[in-house]
Each structure stands twice: as C-alpha cells, then as structure tokens.
Image 1 (cartoon, rainbow over the protein chains, first blue to last red):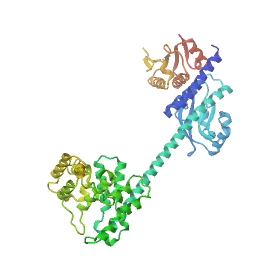
Image 2 (cartoon, chains in turn cyan, yellow):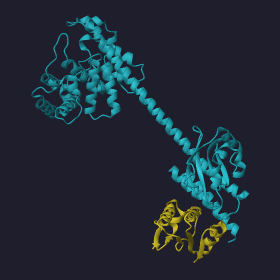
Image 3 (cartoon, rainbow over the protein chains, first blue to last red):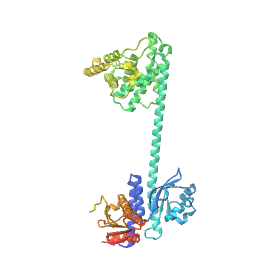
Image 4 (cartoon, one colour):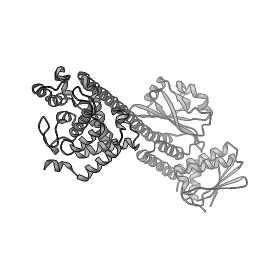
Length: 420
Length: 106
C-alpha cells in the first residue's frame, strides 16, 4: 500500500473514531482521554495537552497531557483580551511562533518553549471558547503541513463539542440543584406559614392553646404509622395544623366561653369547617385535600357528623385522620368545661367508637404508634412529648393497647357493624 | 501466552518484555505505558514490545506507544518493537516512530 494512502486511512480512522467517541461516551474524562490518544496517535504527535476553559474564572484546566513534564501548570489563567483574540481567530491552529503576542503565551512562554509546543488550537463552539489544544512535534520530526492542520483542527472541533456538551450538562445540573434548593426553601416557608397560621388560630382560643399544632402532630403520627411516604405525611400534618382555620371568623366570646355554649352559639361555631374550606380553597397547596380536611373533620363514619352528614366512604380519608387526631386531642387536654380524661378511658372511647365515629384502621394505626413508642420499637418520643410522660406511661396502658388492637382486629371492619 | 483482555509484561534482567496484543488499541492500553514506566523506574534499560499477536495498530495504539517511547527517553532506555508485521512496520515508518524505536519485523 502506498505510504500516503496508508497514512490517510490511519488518520481518517482516527477522525471517525473521535466522532463516535464524543457522541457515545457517557464518561466525560474517559472521552477526553480517548480523544486525546486518538488526536496524538493520528499524526504520531509526541506531546500535547487538552485544556477546558472556564469563562467565569478565565482559567484553563488541563484535562489530559502527555510529555509536558511534571512542572507544566495544570491550570493557567487567560486574559480576557486573549479570549477575544482566540474568538477572532476561530478554530484555526495558531503556530507557537505567531502566538507570542498573546498575553497568555508571554506568561507561559518558558513552559511552552521548553516543551516544544508547535500548535495551539482554540476550541470554539457556538462562538464560545471552550478550551485549547496544544500540540508538540510529530514523531517524524516534520513540521505540520496544511493537511495536518486541517486534520487536528477537525479533531479539536469534535473534542470541543464534547466539552461544550459537558458544560451544558453541568449547567443543567447546577440549575436543577438550584431549583431543588429553591423548592426546599419554598417548602420550608410554606411549613412556617402554616405553623404561624396554626399559632394564630390557637391564640384566639385560650382554653385550647396549642390544639392545632397538636392535631397536626397527631395526624402526622397516624400517617407515619400507616407507613405513608414523607410527602403524604407532611400533607396530612398541614391539614391538621389548618383544620380549625375557620374558627378565625367565629366570635372570640363563643370560642372562649367557660360554660357550655347555647344552640345559637353552637350553630355559629359549627360553621367553622365550611368557612375553613372557603379560606383554604383558593390557596395553592403543595399537598392535595387540605381544604377538604378542614371541611369534613367533624364528619363521622355513621353519618351523624357535620356539616354534610357524610358516611364512611363519602368522607375524604385525610378528614378521617384529622377527625381522629382532633378528637384525641380534645379528650386528652383540659377544657374549660371538662378535665382531660385518663389514658385508659381515652383508649376505651376510641375502641368503642371505632367504626362509628372513627375509621378502625386509623384507630389501629394510632394505637400501634403509641405501643411502638412505649415498647421502645420507635425512637420517636412524640406521644410522650405531647401527652406528658406520666400520662403516657400510666399503669396498664401497654396491655390495654394490646387488647384494644386484638379487639379491633378480631371484630374486623367495624364500619360494617356500624352501618348495619 | 497473551489475551485481548490483559496486557502481559514480564521482566528478563534489564529488559521488560511487553506483549501488546489488541489491548494496545483501547483506552485500557494506558496500563502498558504505566507498567513500562514502572519497569524503567525499577531499573530496566530496555523495553521490548512484542507485536506477535497484534494485527493492526490504531491511533490509540500509536499514542500509547508514543507514551512508552516518552517514558524510555526520559531514562535513556532503549525501545524495540519486535515481531512487527510488514504493514504495521510500514505505518511506524511513515509516522516516524522508527526514529525513536528499533523495529524488528516478523
């Protein structure tokens, strides 16, 4: 085979390989190393380097080098004036002898000359400098001719595209990370806003201070015990925090009445679920059903609740959770007209009303959560914190919870009994 | 014995013998260059690269051989390419590798 033909085939194979390499390699650094070998091997170039350019730091970082010596700088700064020169020159290979006017070259001249760099090729993609290729002498000792320059320019263009793609990907990843952080901040802001609302609601009712916050926490504990995802647990907690938002429109005198309220006042107070729904509906919540939880948290499985007297499956599930959490807190805290009930009574009440007022699987989930905490199966001490240690650890509570769980599970879906 | 998945390098006195095989033509062939540098650091003054099982050498292979030459030149070690088939020998000649390494054809 004639010499020129063999060389041509060898060089064009390298050119084809480099195109494939840039298009199909997912590992950026391996793509650069392979491309670098193909570039050097195509014309048997003894030494050189590929550097990526950072526009922000005006800095070149060498990604692959061969034969440049240990003292060659791994990164080098580029003057903005040089960047403009490179952009003006386009992707033409610059002979080292012609590059002496560049500030960059003057700064690194000793290294460049010592290592016999002959060509500098700016890699420009979409009018953006993405890096430089530096090439030393060929093994043959012959100078680079115009065909050689065309070959290395074409290969450098491919590598430049690979770097450009990588830069785009890095930018996308950076923006995605930025968005993730922004979302997290918004989520925290939303959570803080919700808690502030809950505090505002509770502030109005001096006898049930902290009620909304506790209902939020109990709702969260029930959902956790059901094994729900973190996001759904958060949604339920928010529904709990905001369930009484409608009370903001109820007269303070009615809410804070030290005695049982009359029928008219009771009718006024009973509007708070619908008012709460109307307040919450226009808000774009990151979680679904928050307004529905407010509207239906006083519904009962047996249809004797309000405002709409819904039954079992008609009641949104989130409202059933908040209903249980709300009732549990009402029973376990002191009210102006009623002292808090002892733990065993509360357990009995929940068991008795399971399937009538409360969904049995939710009562089960709550009991399991309490039992798990009492028996040390969970590191979460939320029930103790909310109810007080003495209250939670009252004598006989653990066997009572176990019996209650057996009772609920043995009778099966109590909702059916209730509906009969 | 050689195979395409692994480069074989052994030392015979001051000579390191490398069996290039097809491994040379892939990015993993960088290991050959590293091993050669190690052997030179250990005192080898002669690197003998055998192309007994190598049919063709592509651009990656040429680059890796240039790395071997670079490693040797820094330590004044000799590089010999042996068992080279005529086409590959011709390519080495054309690209100028014969200026830096002795070529012994098969």
